[in-house]
Image (cartoon, rainbow, N blue to C red; front, side, top):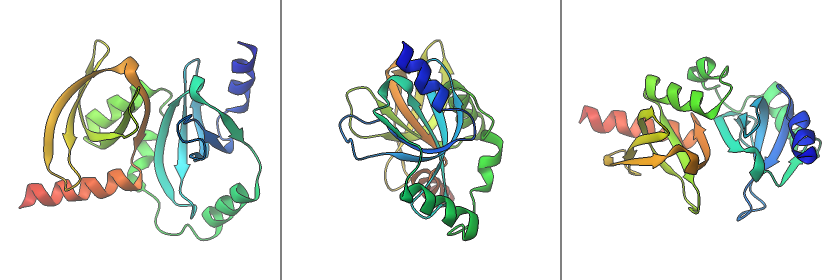
Length: 184
């Protein structure tokens, strides 16, 4: 319990860091600014390797393997963000930057009809789709295939969700494909 409190103390709002939280892929990490951290989860505003906005990442606090607070890699990303931006910021992100929990991210995704990626326990790959409903501990998702076509609708127990990502490059690209498919 002490280590969890120390970890939460590191994850204060506004801190720029890298979080390693995938035991199956220990070299995989997310870089960004901490937006929120509570007893069970953390939310970071992610940046890609070029310092460009890459959405929000929500993960379980218990899954954190390592937190990197200072490194030449982090300095590089922050420099690129501040000096070049590597491209335009994701302007639709402004409304979601005040969320404080994963549940709020799901409600936002449902309300705004934004594609979200969800990782479930015991699954390596994320599923992507539109949040149809969040109620009574159940998340209903309309899945989207890689071509932007509506696929099956599924219901999952929210407690089985280990991570989420919203408004990252992959979701924004898929959102454009869905819009194009609907226009055809």
